[in-house]
Image 1 (tube, helix red, strand yellow):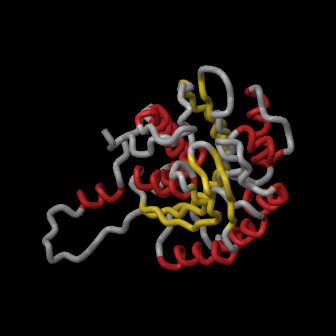
Image 2 (cartoon, one colour):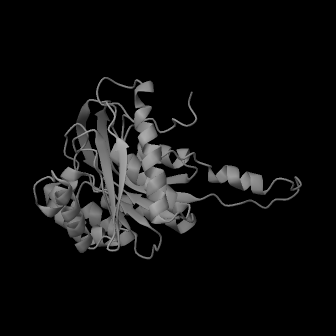
Image 3 (spheres, one colour):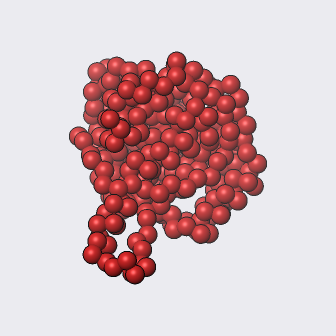
Length: 292
């Protein structure tokens, strides 16, 4: 399923055609906030989120929670920011800009998780929580003692939780799901921890078909796509969650938002080899719809 985005700013420009140059009225862009770590290689984290927001016609704002020294081959150093600084960034954005959705990614430590949870008090829009724990390269990105804090402070706040299979297993202290029944069972367990909806991502599964499940207490929807033969999948998880946040920011229903996200991300992965970035796991192609 393919979705061709219609950027909000373009729609607003069309809606104002015919106005005179003296008309100073302006339409407000749809804006989203990403709270995540920085990827110096540009393929994941804050960088991937902002590229995704832009590609889908949403104005991106950010609060950086950690600095990473990384490239397509791995992570060499991680430094969490001061928790108060993370909270200050969030407050600065929310105090001034109308934010329609928030994506949360890498949080690194328990104190950061607590500050972010407190900073979101009063925000009523959708929150997409990507429980970033391990980089594509296998490097750890969340302290072991922070997992319980994540589960107690932020998971119940999530409109949508988007774990891959290893992350879901770690949150539940179970083995990684190997069968469809295991995946669905773990999705239900995560809903029972308080998330309003869960996307169980199938990228770490096996077989010719990659299947994601959108699960709520009322329904389960499977999203299938052919598994693509590429090593260039860096930032896939960040990109899915930020694309979902962007679609929700544009007031899509959860079902429609996931449908659009799934198709758009599949195309971004399919186009990833065209970028030829780095010597390891390269990034997905966030601008596959506009780059020739």
